[in-house]
Length: 389
Image (tube, rainbow, N blue to C red; front, side, top):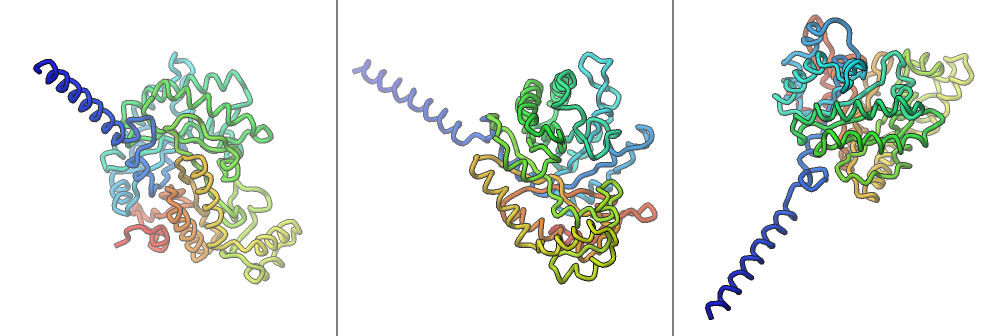
């Protein structure tokens, strides 16, 4: 009788232990089971880019330390943003003379910036924005995927960089290996390169979520062609500047048929662009404006684009965000810019797509700097659904 009781006791104890283990596995946060936690995704809901710090930068480290003061992050938090994307030029953190390829002096500066942002309970996307600024926006990814030696070096660099960044909580810091890979004419090279880079990052940061994207400047269509990686701790990302003729009108770095554009309306229709067509002697520009009107870009068309993104994510069982989108404001009438921003933001949110606008300040900004004061564009903030009181 005693033996039987002992057996029953051991059996019951074993069942209890097994049940506890099973329960813990079922209730564990995804970040503990090689997935993307809901906590992380929630923190990627509403983001803002700050490119003029570790990417578009001029001056000494001491000067750059003051580029985004505490007051900026207080405002970012107050407005209701949940994350900050920090674009970085590889040249700012890379040192080929070091065995780990890391520039320790500049990394210390970056670490201070990360801690500052985290102190305001804002998540961070560490975005390797360009191989070299010298290449310009036409080729942020440089020789990556086209030069085998450089690609190997890039992977080794990222293993070291990821290992360094692994000191930060993975529920607050997300890693983005390459912004807008181009590989023009050789786009098929990008998926295997992305797989290789992701594996290199995993060696240094096994628990951090990684952003993956498509070639040709991270546009949506290339994402829809992408076969997801086997790594479950990946968030897929695309950029949205559609239609380019509207979002980049007048931008000096854009194509020759977009640079001269002014006052392009949104939403578009043949009626809306009729009077603009005759203002441009270049037949190609006039035809592009006419085509833009015929395409009828509006809230429904943008929503359809986001629906495609959402359906792709559901089909593959993955998470998706849009961490760059915006309009160049110098030549875009404010009412049209506000309308486009609101339509994109609402479409993203309708399909549960986290977003990160380009940018906090500057020519795409939600704020302006006037006489050393930061002034929020309330119409833009309202379009973004932010707290403006």
